[in-house]
Length: 362
Image (cartoon, rainbow, N blue to C red; front, side):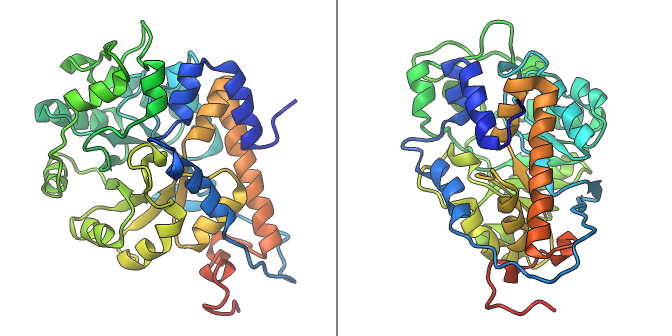
């Protein structure tokens, strides 16, 4: 039987994955308050639907950084897809293309960026971590651009690793035969067995905690690709990002995996949208599990949402077909939610759907 919801897929994935892998994907920092809040915050938002609207024909097509997509749902960067399925990131990117959307490939992928882009029927963006070895980072940027990636997504919320206690308990490490493919040539492809989390040790050893706003200009000097900053939860940081010349921001708390107690992303989306005032695109991730969540995010001003864990559950359960199932479920739920809310296109998904006192839709 095909799973009928993201939650069903998660349970199927839980049964299929090792405890270490499931906990790595599902877990967050410390008490995982922010992991839970990312989901719960959507449940607190109500949709004030319109009636007697002709919704016989509907479209959820959108444009993100100049790329037409079939739905405002992009695939978020998540690491180590080969832990979920042998085809790894190749299965994910093919499913993204099948669905007519964008995949954001993690720096920490098990498959080299060149192979992923070559297999991609659609656009691929590259998520970047900045290494202490800036020459290796510059080489990674050049490699992503030469491979054909269409944007760089700089993650800015990992000066150090969050305390992911599940990973510590499980002694998380990549199994033999898997590596961090995109930086293997620079000597950073291996994750070593240590007491506790091998990933936390890797981040501490290799990623640069001195990353600052001046490095946005440095990154712009390396590439002509659009730059997206991922990890913004404050309006003042969003304004500063626009002033630094970025093309988009992702309202993100790293899926609750960094600072526990950070705000749910949907709760801070609206102030960030207001702060950038249309000067850059705004995306949001964290906690999206239903089409109604996506409708709420669009109503609050997001250009699109990114989904991470649901994609991994689909990948674990069925490889490429499983990821397609995730995207198809969300597409169908968005379509239904639009119809029931009286929205023909995403232009009709306006803020008064969630904040009806703002204005009356005409």
